[in-house]
Length: 470
Image (cartoon, rainbow, N blue to C red; front, side, top):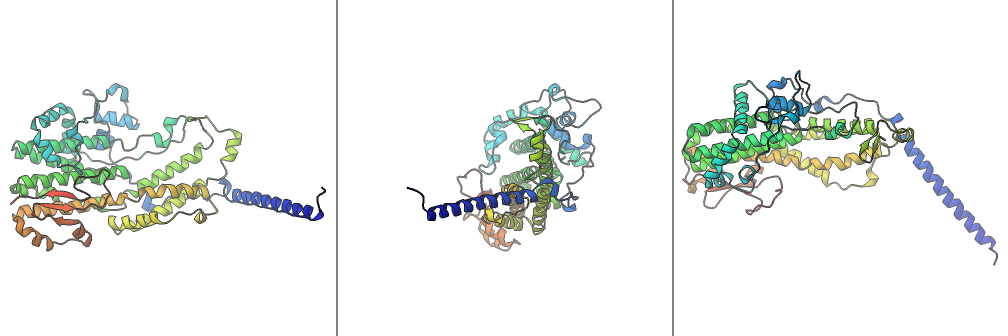
């Protein structure tokens, strides 16, 4: 049956409609490409002063950063020189990692005890022979740690974390920015901090007061250096955790020997200003983001099957000019970090609330900008990862206050029956008062941390701090 005139009219209109829709979509895509390419990207701008990482003025041989990086060098090697080789610092007589025969790190249960889950001091002292053997087995590492801590205490050495710069000439995957060494001093810092804790536990169990104070002094020197010299977020988090462990150790020692309180007064000085600065780690993290974005633009079209090509092909080079706008993305990222930096001025608790409120906002594709859409998506995905970290710094400040309270109770020789009334009279912020409570028997403080626990604790969310029995 022949198609009627009316049917042909409907089909023509439908064809025109589909054609118009396709043409509209094509024009929309072309308009988007016209506004999202390298030729119309923003001009490069100097990075904001508030987001500039700190320059490192220490000479390599005086910077404990390198000694900790090379801490596991073989017995005949110099840790600082090996650390510089691992980092890639040029030296007159270049040390090589292959010649240094790196030693394994201690990994047994004593070295890995978690203060979040256990009373590590009690566990170590329950196995005195095992504690003695651990210290003997790691005599070389502990000797190196002691030398570093003594140098820090005497002012001969300092610690300033270096940040990697991206390489202008990237020829292989190992040259890519995310594959370069980042915060390699952390493993050495962990071992030294734990080694000092083990030495303190051994000295206390043997009644060696001088050795105990020496171990505690070295732990304090390293902790302060980490708090003051860390730049990256990961290094700051480790510094906060190590200081919290040190405070837990002090509280445990006070519970065992309340009469030792006067000798420990120097161990509870106010936290350094940088440890209380909620924005101290932001310049490094914004710097990492800027370096990564610049390299993304640099390497576009050169990645193939996990390998890097010498250069991108002609078509790939052309396509790389569309979509991602590196300068606008970097500047948008800096603008976001400046907002966080401003919020950080009110302290870790305020920053935590601010960042979590940002994270809670529902993501919508309709809210993405027309210009630099791909860059905006990258930032929307990356930024929420930082939201919970201020809780770890807030926990440091909370634990420092708890340690001060435990020390004051030991110093004043408060009996358990009077501690509740005494605690109610102490100068605490509202959040501290909510999170610090006394047990019914008055023999421990219960502390509710800000950070969510990674591993569930048998005691629930709160942590127990022991107090002297009398």
